[in-house]
Amino acid sequence: MRATTLSILLCLMTFMANAQELRLTLNDIIERAKEQSPAAKQAETRLENRYWQYRFYRSNYNPQLRLEGYVPDYNRDFFSNRQDDGTIVFQERQQINSLVNMGIEQPIPWTGGNVSINSNLSYFKDIERDLTQFNTTLFNVRLVQPIFGFNDLKWDKRTEPLRYEESRREYVENMEEISREATQRFFSYLDAQINYEIAQFNLANNDTIYKIEQGRYNIGTTSKDKLLQVELQLLRSEQDVVEAQLDRETSRLRLREFIGLTQDVQIQLVLPEDIPEFDLDFNEALEYAKMNRSDFLQFERRRIEAEREVAQARAERFQTNLVASYGYNNAGPEFSGLDVDPNNQQRLNLTFNIPIIDWGRNKARMQTALANMRLNEYVIAQDEQLFEQEILTQVRQFAVLRSQLEITNKSDEVAQERYDVAQNRYLIGKIDITNLNIALNEKDDARRSYINALRSFWTAYFDLRRLTLYDFEDKVLLYKPDEFQQEY
Image 1 (cartoon, rainbow, N blue to C red):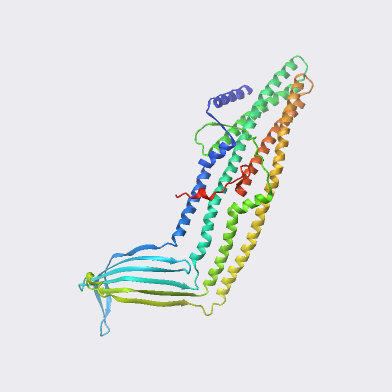
Image 2: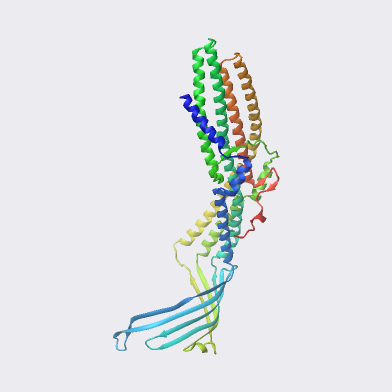
């Protein structure tokens, strides 16, 4: 059984040795993830989508030149014609109608209305009666102005720039979240890599110990019970190597998938022991967070949106529209004479819709909007407090993690040295196999604790960058507005 297992292990290790291998640092993994991972592509696409939404919003304030109409509109049917004596006669008709209108329309953002300049030509032909008519509006200026109405353009001008700015900052936050996730994947594979190395070391070590115990048993200096104990430990080591190899391969595939590495290569990770040194102050971290994070822009936007709902509820109490137009039009049987001596065309009307008795409908709508605005203020105040607490916790935790890292690093060195001493004492017969196994387990646990401390530190480091959008090591802002001037 053991010979079969060792043969499998030798084949696996031979395959691994022959495969192409990449040595990658934590920074290499993060850069690859930011450049080519599916998560990074999604973040870029979301940013592009929000950019075009912003461009669409901006276009609402620009004049638009429109061409509309129908050419032709052919109709053939029977219609009822009441005669002088009261009888009805159904008569056939064939008609052709056409209309072309060209106009330029300019919204008025300050008032919510719009002004337009139009010119149109319509054509009518009655085939049965051989009658042709042209009608044209040579020039027409038209104003549509809601009075006391809700002005979408005014409120969009307050919220949409904030929403777009949020998306740009969210993109940087997403990049830092990718760094954090890449760090997690890095250490998951590094854990598997370290466990595999530990398992290989323990297998080789236990094989040596088994041979030593066999020799001692043959000369009668150890018991059968101790020999069987060492053999059982060797079998467990062989099983640990197989499991560690499987975990290592699974973690490697998950890491490759996240960073977008398509080549089937082996990855050898470099332990990130170069820890950045910088002073960290809560007030400074909070200041950068308020200055850079999208959350604080979102708080402001949510307040404005609540005010918008109140304004909209107030405007819906009654509706009044003013429509006025002035221009020149003409009609005739020939197209060529339509521009000769045209008539003046004027129009003015004021429409209104005012409920007299609505059984409290408008009041209920208004009070609902006001209650939602108050609720929104309470929720935002709580969100701001929770955000400050998150930063405070992160700053305090960071100091603890740095101290923990130093302790676990020292413990790893001490445990390794203790095992070396215990191994030498075992070889000269000063301690038994039980004490040697205790030293071995303490060495492995100390190594794993150090790796976990590194994981916690680097995860917290990128969490801090994400929460503040500030690089405390290089003292630079991670969000730079000038970098977002690209055109898609």
